[in-house]
Image (tube, rainbow, N blue to C red; front, side, top):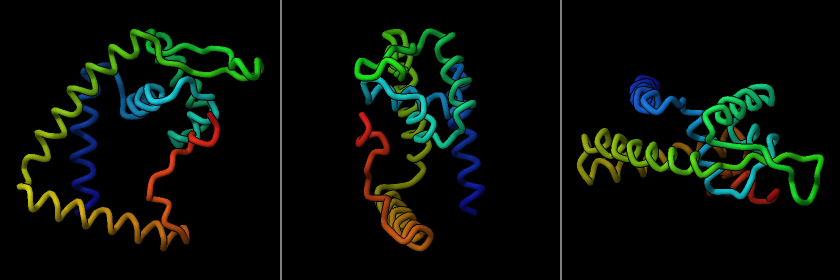
Length: 149
């Protein structure tokens, strides 16, 4: 049942993002870049959980749309940082607004109590599965990029 709900939610996300010529990974990349002043390709790859060649293709595609650009790292000229362009910020603003409206509309199926109960149970499940599988509660936050930028 969890997988069926996930598939339906994911399909809704993909349908919405397709209207903006993005897929979920590209959207996640834009969100990450909006929160950081340049991200190394390797960090972007690690955060998105995709290999470096896929990350390169993703950045190439976003760059072709004019949403991102590669810039030399001011501290290490051998390193390139990926940054969001003004066009990227503007496009992301449109996408984010539509995405939030879509999520709110889909989650409105649940009343307030049901939403709180589901959130509580999902957080508990995530925490306990993380501890079971990794021996630690890494779900408390922590940004994979926070120690690198």
